[in-house]
Length: 127
Image (cartoon, rainbow, N blue to C red; front, side):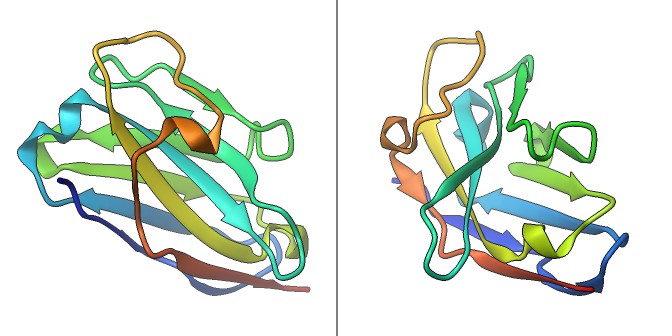
């Protein structure tokens, strides 16, 4: 069992930056692929970015490519999502999820592939 906790959300003006963190309760987090999804009110959950275990292969949604960067610090059991050049369209609740895996290839972008989910952190971008 792994508990994931997101942090780093908040209110920022358009063009600004935020750095989200997803921290796990167990040291074996290095064996987990981790994903970020987001969901705005009245809208479907949307894939944002994912990172594989260990070597850290990454995947990004087209809407965030070039603006967001996902990374992991396995010593701190943490995955970060650096969000730059934010726009009001990025406003949403951001959720991280993880799954233990033996694979180091590109991580899944499907929510159903992930076992453990955090409670989310709100990101609000004002215009």
